[in-house]
Length: 373
Ligand SMILES: *[C@@H]1O[C@H](CO)[C@@H](O)[C@H](O)[C@H]1NC(C)=O
Ligand SMILES: *[C@@H]1O[C@H](CO)[C@@H](O)[C@H](O)[C@H]1NC(C)=O
Image (cartoon, rainbow, N blue to C red; front, top):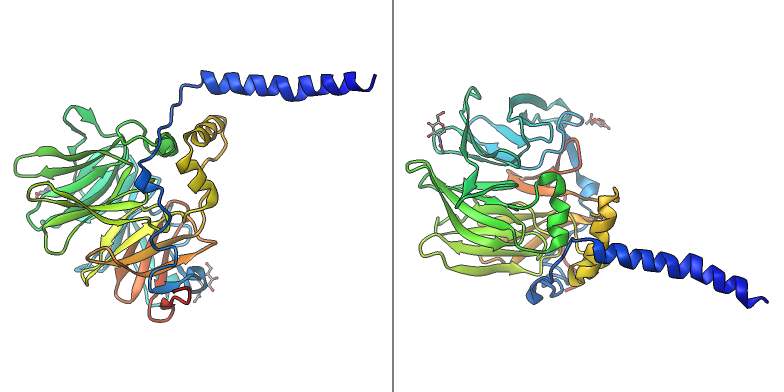
């Protein structure tokens, strides 16, 4: 009777678990959607931009080690020479970078009581913060007064205020990545694959918050163009940045098929934007983005504590004003890079993982001709 035990084995260890799994899968209400087809195209930069430095970490220097808890965004205040950054403990910190980076001074500036992400400077010396939990904040230049500017639009409250940029006209342009999931659940937004993000403006003279675009896929970084005619904003899961024309509201593609999942985008005052990507495209990510059932399984596992976001090969892509890739600074062993800001000859990077700012000397460790082209 050798068949009988193996049949029982099959029944108890294969069929029963399978039936249980199917039942759990069916009962789970998490319902991921298909992404738009054009977001699944392989990387337009798969052969890479003309210039590459794929060993970012080899030249990286760490600033404020242990003192900056996940410094997500970075803004450089030219007049004072301070770098402002928002940390996971609610602090907006100021950093004075010294000649020898270990002598840099980190100062606790203002605690928002939330989670400061995007940082930009207003026209009157104030610091504008997109706080993931609080909304859009105005902190006076002396750090003494924090004012909530807006936390909802069209009757829908922000759940993940993410990035902000300031126009020369004083209008603030900002994103809410999701009205459904807050920051500590952001991976579910990405796994669900539905567009819960919005691009908005806040006019301080009228105090009106306007929805410029809704139904965006995890609306993330946003940057005003140097000629003040349009914004460039990033949608993380679909690896795309688009232009939004302020006058008339036309939307145009800026760059798609990015080599990673875009977070913040920053203009450098010198003809280029820098797009930070916390993770490069991996096979697992690619499959998950294509097949909603994989995202559902991942989300179910995530509910039981499994960390769903594998991140590797983070970096920063430099593009010109038309969205053409110029140079790509990345590293297989780097992850969670959320912002890239060029200050002088250095690229300063914020991160959702590290306890310091990372910088790279672009003269000493330049991107070189991409041999794959
Ligand atoms: C800076 O500090 C790190 C450790 O925190 C150390 O490894 C490194 O050698 C220091 N660099 C200099 C130039 O002193
Ligand atoms: C921020 O508040 C200051 C006063 O502390 C005010 O002068 C400034 O206009 C405000 N900025 C915005 C964008 O609301």
